[in-house]
Image (cartoon, rainbow, N blue to C red; front, side, top):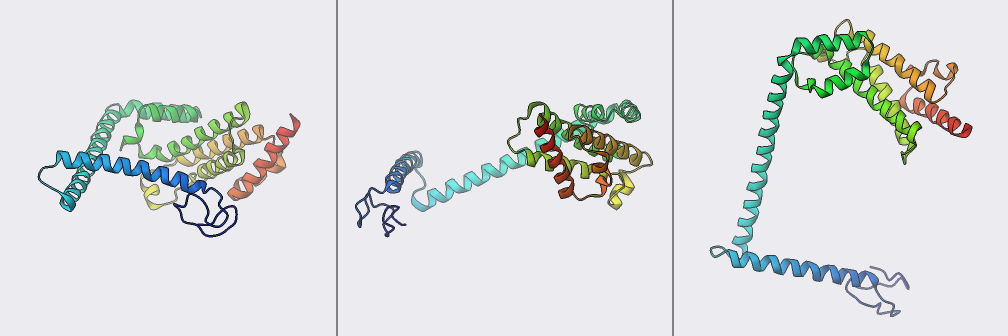
Length: 250
């Protein structure tokens, strides 16, 4: 390493520079860290030796490592099994009232209450159900719709985001996500997650989205013309310009 005063080489443990005699601050911290490490190491080593009468040296260390690996694997298996059990239980609960859930989701869609749909889906853990595939794309869109409302609220009402540009780019990203769900993007979506109602509802959600953006960022009709077809970077740029104009007017 180099001395920060004279630029000559000095060792990491040199207390002072052999060329200019200035104190090596890094060495002081390094020596302190090494002393603490050695103290911890010696303490751990002493405990291992005291509690181990069978193994010693290399064999003892290998055994400890093997035990730790076994414990980690057992924990991972336990978490995996626990997740599967919870998922199966949640699926049974969701499917037990599937007709009630379906009726409520249809009611929320028909009333264009997409925020209510998001909360109903989340509270009842309907993502675990395998009998509501035709609502998947609408549910995905409502999640981005909720995230956008959250960002808009904090951006304009609280103004508590440190990185405003990042949040604006997130909003543009969420909007793109919703628009992309108007039509199925894969064979799986065409077969399992798409029906004749998906496009009208998601398209309507996009219109809601555009109205929110135009109102919050005070964008003109000209700004919104062809907005859907712009790439995310261009969308974000328009929103940033709107944000700057809104704040200048305050």
